[in-house]
Image (cartoon, rainbow, N blue to C red; front, side, top):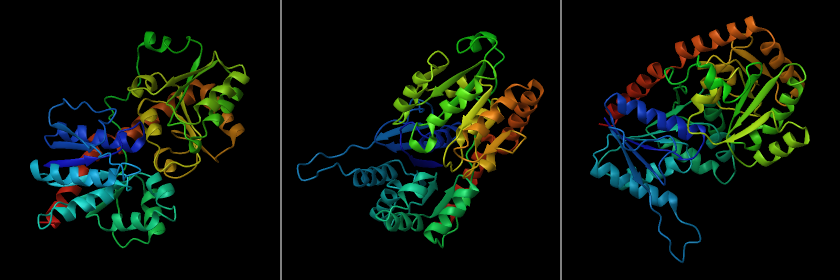
Length: 375
């Protein structure tokens, strides 16, 4: 099939998932055309079967801001015609599904099916803003197919928008060959000494991720066992987390690594992942850590209970309960046998339920279903 994919190219879950879907589909012989304002951060546009089409915006004196939604719709229609696309798959409802709807209307009477994948904040934040709710509902309803990355998000989307259209659950996934624990002791030495446990947090450092809580949790943990905290990512809360770390005298133990192209390399040496978010529609980084045999201590919110099994792969705690999260972290890391079993369980669960080899065929099947319905 010839598939057009649109996503945000920035550092974030929806863009990472969309990029990985495209890469996996290309490996399976499909022709993939990414359409966005920049190349997604994890995409190699020179790979076989993958093409990138940049959306260029017109700067005109009467326009206070560039009209990306319109420019994207025009580019989608152009790529669909000249590359004979079978469908458009857009990730994140606003504005991508709106642009896809406009492109579809522009191309009539030719039919180009549109599939929208909902990832989380496009529904929980943007979609529920009073000014965006009607257009979000409209664009989802006008999509030929809709998927959500977790059962939590599927139900929430249907309820909040009173949708008549069915939403299909196709969960996020992990490449189990890329994300796995390393046995290379020298690689681990890059981040910590032999006697230190490696705790990792990865996010976009937005307020919802509660990155200062990560530092507070680590401050409690360090009084019980030697450890290093690797903070991966960047965003508005990084400065506050760095200040808190310095004020607590943790500068030598908390390392801010910024955005990283290969989080698999870091997670391969992780002993545990901390994810104290206020909300997570799925929690992709938790799944990636689990594939690397790292137990997860996270908030019991959103879609995380679908990924982490309480007491088996890690622990789920009420948000903002720093002491409980610290206690569970110490419990896991101070008991080698429990840590080992949880890691093995986590890897096994990731491989059985969320491996890319199991999820990508679900997308292929859904693509064929939607295309056949629109012929």
